[in-house]
Structures are given as C-alpha cells and as structure tokens.
Image (cartoon, rainbow, N blue to C red):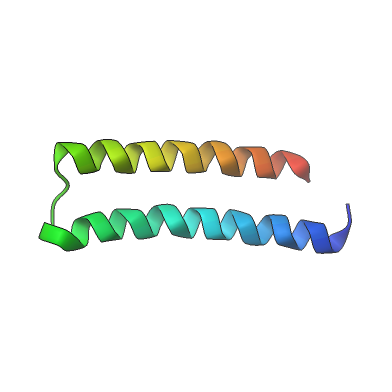
Amino acid sequence: MNPYIQQQVENMIDQAELFAKGCHKAAMKDDGTLDVTEQYTIATIERLTEEFVKGLKKIY
C-alpha cells in the first residue's frame, strides 16, 4: 500500500479513537456521572467508532 495513504488511515484511526474518548470525558465533565441518555449516546458513539476503525484496519 502507498505509505502516504497508510499513514492517513492510521491518523484517522487515532482521531476516531480520540473522538470517542473525548465524548466520554465531555459527558462526565458535566456532572461527574452518565445519565441514561448519555450512556446510550456514548455507547452508540463507541460502537460506531469501533465499526469504523475495524473497516479502516481492513484496508491495510
């Protein structure tokens, strides 16, 4: 694979994982706990991020 594309894929994986972690921290920052709505939202973000990362990892 083109090393430049591979580097971009790796960067996107890092960014996606950082996004999911940042969303979790943001939800906790509000009041220190996750309510039901926040739990659902965070779980959805984490699930979709994981699917996206899996797809990117199949490229290389």
